[in-house]
Amino acid sequence: MDGRDWGTFLLPYEQAVEELKVKFKTMRAELKKREEYAPIEFVTGRVKKISSILEKSRRLNVALDDVETGIEDIAGIRIMCQFVDDIRRVAEYIRARKDLTVLIEKDYITNFKESGYRSFHMIIEYPVQTALGQKKVLAEIQIRTLAMNFWATIEHSLSYKYRESLPDDMRARLKKTAEAAFVLDNEMSAIRLQILEAQKAFEDDSNIVSRTLSIIQQLYFYHLVHEAIEAQKRFNDCWERHDMEGLKVLLDDVKQLLNNARKGENPDEQL
View 1 (cartoon, rainbow, N blue to C red):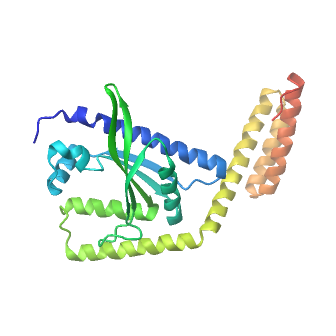
View 2: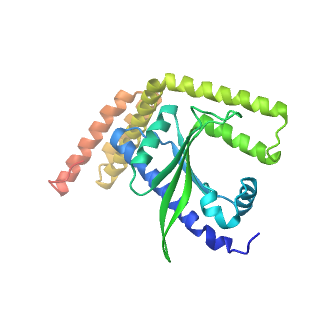
View 3: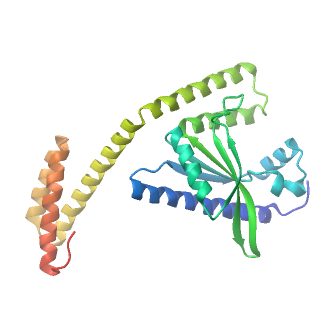
């Protein structure tokens, strides 16, 4: 093994992972605000351990002096989606970005591996601004559904345990479970619209509850104690009866109370 300072060597990769995580999380938040639905469920990232880099360089016959170009996934980003269609959409967003360059795409969803592994990989070149200037590093972005990720995580753990020499019976069972995960993804895609409608309804209801309780608390600040107590009683009654229509009416009522109170202090301020 060469005598490089691995801690210093990995610094640009660590920076790339942190920056890319922030960027994709920001993308998720922006899409959610613009379209009320984001194809990104959540984002994770990691820098390959030194032992894993050494093992992969040995397995791929990559000289240690060439690991920066010979090993594409020292920096790794994983983007999880709810539906298979979301994967294609996220890939389009990544292709359109100007702050990175997509070099290679590997579609293991259409062309899944013999093991049953499914995922969509994008190898990118990402410029990092270091203390010594700009450095371009390679990173791998894996885009998967939650079902694909669950399977791949288990398969990776077993492969590590058995040093990639899985017993035939376990290999067969893993392949069978990969097919089951694929069926699950297909079924979820078939009822995608109903799932999204249910998720939106839940989120809307949660927002109504949060806003109503928040405004009730603000009524106390304006010394509307009696009104706040009565509003809380109405809230409790609606909540016990799961009466969302009643909560919507209550929200309008407490907003009006608060607007009236605020106009008393500042005629131009309204909710």
